[in-house]
Amino acid sequence: MKVLVLGHRLQYEVQNLVGLFFPGERVETAFEKQPDWQVLTYLREGRGATRLLVLCRLGEGGETLRAHCAVAPGEPGHKQRCEMAFGELLYRLFSQVTGYRPKWGVLTGVRPVKNIRRRLDGGMDEAGLRRLFCGEYRVSEQKFDLALQTARVQERALAPLPPAGPQDVSLYISIPFCPSRCLYCSFVSHSVEKTHKLVEPYLELLLQEISATFDLVERLGLRLRTAYIGGGTPTILTAGQMDRLLEHLFSLVKTPLEEFTVEAGRPDTIDREKLRAMRQYPVSRININPQTLNDAVLERIGRRHTAAQTVESFYQAREAGFANINMDLIAGLPGDSYEGFVSTLDRVVALDPENVTVHTLSVKRAADLKSTAMVRYAAADAPVERMVDYAAATLGAAGYDPYYLYRQKNTLANLENVGYAKPGSEGLYNIYMMEELHTILGCGAGSVTKLVGRGTRPIERSFNYKYPQEYIRQFATVLERKGSLEEFYGCLSEAEHPAV
Image 1 (tube, one colour):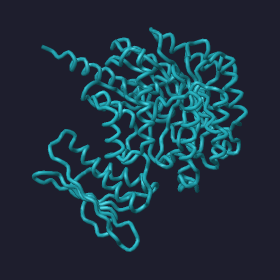
Image 2 (tube, one colour):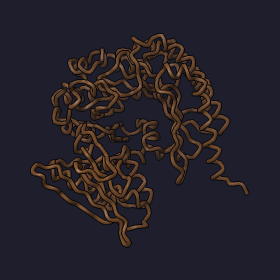
Image 3 (cartoon, rainbow, N blue to C red):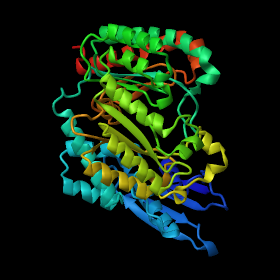
Image 4 (cartoon, rainbow, N blue to C red):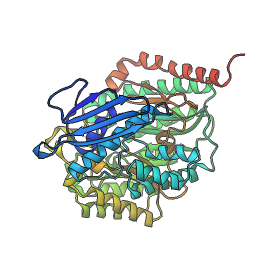
């Protein structure tokens, strides 16, 4: 789609709105007049107002649709207000052309709950929030209620804990290997069949990076609250390797953690020996992720295990003493049906895990699904909205509350991912990370250190190398990049205690 951008540089929001209504459509942006434009966005600064105009000629017969508005100049957040105004204008015209009204309205950000929490903290009441989100932002009442409930559950979950402070951090450790690559996966993970020889040297260096990170934590006076080992599939490690990793890690942890999670995502990597290895340490939460309990769908998406193995792994984890288990499901998998998803969810609820996370399928550029004949796989191919609605109703009736929520690009029907939990078993790391309440320290290939300050200080990010080969080859640089932590907390300290 050819988008003409005149008088402004707010094309990011414009492109996001195009993606909402026309998934998979390539956007070509031009900053000077072109005769073959399909969408024109124009901004002009005037004396009394900033005027925005959008023209669309997408329908048959050459009809041009027009929408315009004015934004008061000089008001706080003027740029953001103009971005949102372009979103509103495009939403109005695109929904007129397509007849489609995305349930999240013009919101394209990853963190709608953070948006709500910020306004609640600023004193806005529920009625004002509803007018803003359901009116100006065009969010459906259903999605607004979901996001507001999630914000309330987060308040309840965090209430017994110390409030987030500038020295608080959580730790993410990446094990970027899997037994096989799932069709939909876009994470930095490698089939262990091809990269088995890298696992041991990778682990050796990872332990060194963890040591260097804890040296900084201690020197900077940081407080580690939660830790999460993710991937990939961390339980691709042998029981001995898992024991070495956890022994090393807990030799460095000086105070009890609020939560420690290990993602044991693939049932074909779980056995009693590995579960026993984890139970020797204060691992308080694990993930056992079926995605679906339909064997035909599992085979189609490249997961080399059966539904029966998932159930067996769950019972083994219970026998080993794990009292907080999360299970991930995906709505809209290729080959799945509404009836199949309902069957999966009902069977998972019958197992009675403490957490259930319901993802909506997102077709990412790096996923194998994107490069196959299913590249045009869309919401129409699966009743994904009904799946997500069934999950919300069923889990709510079973005593689970939504406690964290996020959105991704290229998600079917522009829907969301929601973590549900029984009261008192919410995944704290997920809340801290998704709501950006404090710094997340990343160790391992593909991890990101996200440095969260206070006030108006922007969030800063430091990236590790994506792939295990790069991580191993450039490990000296990985350690050098840890310096960003000292610089950030040095500046943070100066800002809070300026020199006289």
